[in-house]
Image 1 (tube, rainbow, N blue to C red):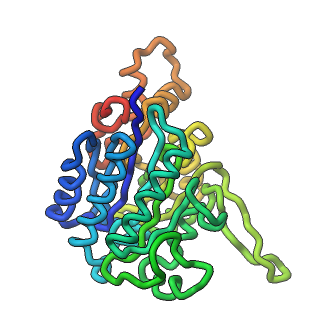
Image 2 (image 1 turned 60 degrees about the horizontal axis):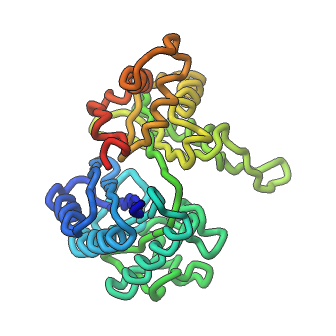
Image 3 (image 1 turned 120 degrees about the vertical axis):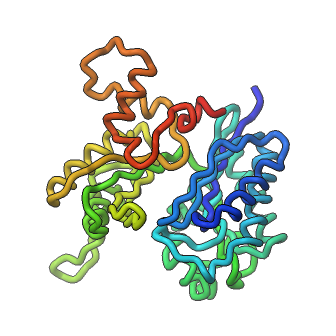
Length: 332
């Protein structure tokens, strides 16, 4: 079996179509790589790109895209709802056919070293590629975002894994690593109050929130869902708040479970859920789990089950959800 790896780089540009096309074209220029999706978001000012290829071609395509982003994106001018620290913000490698996680860790190191040497961009390794336990969590690496990088790079504890600790004002810094398949899943609320969305995120995400006890000591109150990261955002173009969720293990918490939990917490805070969206691609199994959830008819066809999931989760509220373009097995 030929080896196949997925790469899902996120770029800090969701508004300039010319720049987004140039990044996509740089990926297409690599023989043996298949570009699966390019999803820009103007409010996040971010584009999520998904492609697959052999180990060697995936690293080459990731490098070419990062080089293009370094030439066309200037972080000194960037604003957006989503946390970010670099023009190419994060580059994860995900094992697919014939690949192990250890092999993807090697790819992340190859990519990171080359970017640091050839492009002068500081590189941090996260998730399974992290060399320091504190750097496993991407949110920890990205804390302070682009604006906090000059201070972070001067801190001995935050020396980059590759590259010199010098602030690259135009490109910022990039995180790369290896991880399991992640589902980027956003739940839409019937309110434009970002604070409500963030409160729901604090209640459901695994890391929960930090509070002071009566003695002034910091304590962590975990959220209700495992393998879930979340935050609240405002989509200005639609004037709605979203609970922006990363499902890091959909076997532990599948989309429909996250959806139902957000519905429950939204009702508790006096608002409703109106729908949801998948950013990037989703495994077919995750949608089949949702479609079978409380299904009265156990004899439905696979297509009927998938459509039930789309309807139940309101996946077409913002943009039409086409399973042929959003389910990874149909795209490869």
